[in-house]
Length: 534
Image (tube, rainbow, N blue to C red; front, side):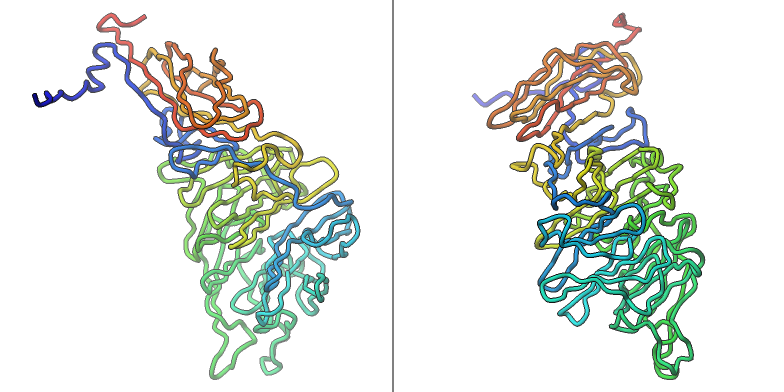
C-alpha cells in the first residue's frame, strides 16, 4: 500500500495551549557579541559575551590558539613600537624599546638573537603606525617620527644585510607621517600642529621646493592639530581629534609648473563630530581606512565615515566601547587606542587606560562580528605582514619583565596550535548567550542539550536566571564529558521556572580543541487563565 501522508506537526500556538515544550536551538553564533540592546532583544546568531572564541567558521565557534613570543627578552623597560620593514625581497620585523627618558633602541627581530646587543640607538619614538617607503623598487625606508614632537624624523634602511638608522635631514620635526602619491608627507610640529608638509616627488630626503617656486617649504594648513594621516585612492586624509579632512589632487604648493601644471591640491572638510583619538588606530583593510575615537571605531574610503561599533539597528557594542574610552585622554601617559590588521579580515582594537582598564576587541570584518580576548595579550601597538606570509605582531602584552614582542598569528590556528599564551596562561574561552525564549512571562524550562567537541579540557556549563542573567548556577553535569574523536550531543539539567534563562560556557582547563555547535532548549509558558500557573 502507498504510504499514508502525515499531517503537519503542531505549531507553537498548539504547544503553548496544551503545555507542551517549545524547542529552541542556538545553532548560529556568527553574529558575535552584541551589547547595545538588552539580552531579551539580542538577535538570532548573536550572544552577550564571547571571549577567546572565534566565530568566523559557519555553524560553530572555535577556541582561539595561543600566542607566542616573537623575540627574545630585551633589557629595556618597555617595547613601545613594532613595525614590519617591507624591504623588497627582504621583509623584516623591527621593534623599538625604551627606558625612562629619551633612551630608545631599535632591534631587528628577525635577525638578532642576543639581547641586549645588536640593537641600534634611535632618537625618536613614534606615536603612530610607521609607514614604509619603497623607492626605486629596489630599496626602502621605514619612517620614524617622534610622537612628542621636537625631534628630526629618522629612517630605518638596509646597509648591506643589516639595518641602519639615519636622520631625514631637512624634514619638519613632525609627529605623524604617511606616504602619498610618491611623496613623504608629515604633519603636526610643536610650532605648527595644524600644518601638513610635502617632500619632493619620489625623494623623501628632499623637502625643498624648486627655487623658482619662491617658497622654502611646501605645506598646507588644516583646521586643527593633526592626529594622524592616511592615503587612500589618491586622497590624503588628515585626522583631527573631533573631525577629519581630505586633500585632493596631486601637486602640493611650491611644486609643478606655474603655467603648464600648477599646484592643484585642495583641502576639503569630510566629517565634523567624528575624528581620531590616536594615530596608532589608523590602519587599512578591504579598501578602507579604519580609525578610532572615544565614541567608537569607524571606516572611510575617503568620504563620509561609517561606524563599526555603533549600528543603526543597535546590534553593535558602542556602549561597551564607550565604557572603556569615555574619559580617555590619548595625550596622557598610559593612554592608548591602537589597531592592527590580520590577513585583511581581522581587526584588532585595543584600549589602554591609565586607570588599568585594558580591553582588546577582535572584529571579523567580512561579517562585522565582535569578540574579545584575554587581557594578557592586549597590545599597545601592532604590525602586520601582508600575503602570502600573513602575520600580525604586537608589543607590550601586559607581561612582567623581561619584555618581549608577541606573535599573535597563532591565534588563528586553533589546532594544532599552542594551548597556552606566551606567558604560560592557558587559553580558556567563555561564551554567554542571549535570553532563551520569547516574552517576559513566567516559563517552565526543561532539560537542555549541548553539542560540542572538547578534547583534553574541562567545560563548565552554568544556567542564569532573570532577564539580565544576574544569578548563574553550575549544572550538575559540569564539567561536561570530554570528547575524543568528534563532536557529541549531551544533556544537561536546567529544570527551572523563570521568566528567562541564559547559558554561560566557561573552559576551566587547557584543551587541544574546543568547538561549540549548538545549545538546544525547551520551555512552555505558564498561563493563569487555564490554571497552569504555579
